Image 1 (cartoon, helix red, strand yellow):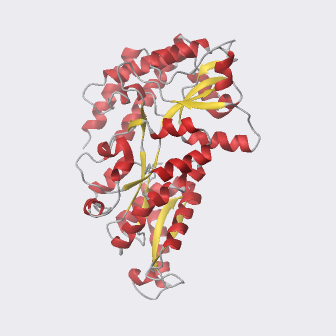
Image 2 (cartoon, rainbow, N blue to C red):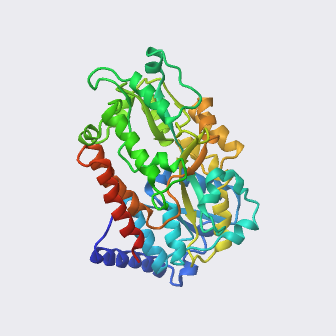
Length: 426
């Protein structure tokens, strides 16, 4: 959320005052303020956003119990204010030793401003097996310079209602193209809005068919983006097999309810939906017989190709105990964290055998583990600082097109103009 200058200044002052008060209570400098915990261990502060509190706290507790030299203290900040406060902490200095970072674009920004440490040598000199981060790792740091390690990973897949497919006499294939998906969605559509073959959520995923082909919004040739928009228009407005955008906007995107009550047969979604479905089943809110399949792919694209992104943790440039901080970071982003996150329906970035088993134990469906961990994930967003601005511009233009207010040529012309303005900004 964008803040006015006054609000930012007030926030900075409040945060700074809190830090000073904490230091003043020790009667010494910032270093002594965080040196020892109650049991005499070196105290490290790990700042996170509140949505991650349950599993990050468990990871920290496990780490604290695994050794007798360091205590990691988890400091949770409200989810909607975390990003702003993180910027203040990293620019003004704070008592943070490790920090949560949401996206690769934020990592890039903090790298460019010198706000976080270069971890390249630490990683190279460690026993951390970076191959366990999978197919997205190399694209994350094309220059080989590492400034944060991934904690979580997202993975998009195709969720479907097994009972609705069985009633229609349809068997889900091992891998579909998007054209095959569109044909199946038509077969699964019936009545006047009573049952739709699919649901395309109105998030920033209007260009994903291009993304699967390695084409991003900052690429030189974005013709595949137009193809992606035309395909989604086919689903919503030509075949009428998907919930129309106007209805999605009017119902505040009730995708989960529509899927659980059988109004929707298929839905491209991320792994977080697994936990939502398991929770609702446990609470007796739904008895849906659901399953997942690999994401459909454009013609000619390798089977299993989908998209995702990492969430990260890094070390501030002025952290007073970088070696000890890195040891925890390595634990968090390695086997230690990978066995905890699946308990909460989260997909760890580190995909070792223990992580796969922990995920299987929670989900209870072996094929889901295969779909998730065998996927060939490409980055949903590349490491480009202005990419979120490009996504916003595309979403605005795409929705006018999908609502029938602009044709595709005007849509692409308007987007291209905005795209060039964003990319040419100093």
